[in-house]
Image 1 (cartoon, rainbow, N blue to C red):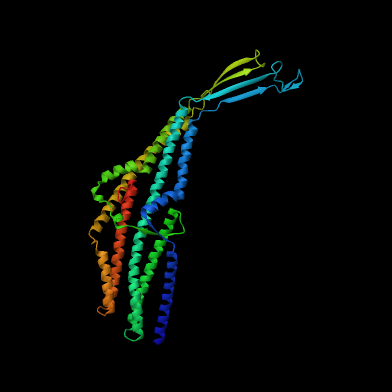
Image 2: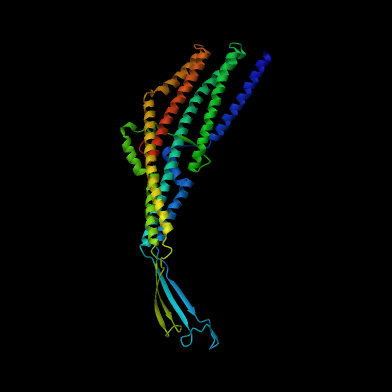
Length: 431
């Protein structure tokens, strides 16, 4: 029996050393902790996120294509001269008296408004690049805000564990001394220590979850050298009442602000403009020019006016026109699909936000403070032996579950609000 007790004690001492090592590592990691508000995080995200900065170049590239589409075709200048004059036995004889040469200039003129149609196409493409950029911004910003709130509430839960662990460590030290003096049983001492180790293990699980979220935050903020601790004043967590805004109002706002819907609409306009351009491409372009021939025509110093145009007997761009028409029909369906998707996402997010609001309204706002005060009172009464170890254990389990559930509910509410903002395409709640 003594040998078994000795092995248990050695086992628990080993586990204690492991936990102390973990806490020491956490202390080293905390040296790089950066307290940051949501506004500061968003500002840093806008300034440093590489994916967002890279997407901006697509906008610049598309706008540069507008400049290219506005340019006219370059004129073509040709010159041909005598390589060898056998009568005079002279190379490159292009003199005015005995030589021969020809100079011609030619300009391609686009007909059927091809240039203007190309400019419109390039402008629409630039608008689509803008839509893609702002939709990426919407997506990454939602990820940032979602992770920020999740990290905030997980760290709140870790704080609740810290309060319990600190109290239990104090009691564990006291019980360890009492057990050595034979004033309490080894069974009670081990049971108390088991509760302590259980809480530490659960806290480590939460810490690992926070670490995963921190990894995403570091990528979004382009900073791998800081551990971000979200700071949220209580006023920032009070969102506008959602039920005061009708669902139809939110859907109408989404139709105006959702960049992915605007991208689909601009894609339809792009295919329609391309269809118009392809029909114009069936009209051949006109080649206009003039030439001068020194001594190679029916008279010396001959001048000519040159006109040229393709005869559209075989290629009238039939295939491209047909393909462009199919693209228009396809884009119309995609716009309808995207409109339904937007409406569905807003409706789903709206109902979820209402449900979380309704649930939190039934929770006493002073519940957390009262629970923490009661935790201290229970701990003192246990040390005074006014309550049993079983009652202490039951209360600690109840306190932990209640605090975790409350944090989860509050996090669910903020996640629902952010999902609703994301579905609308605009931050309408919790500015």
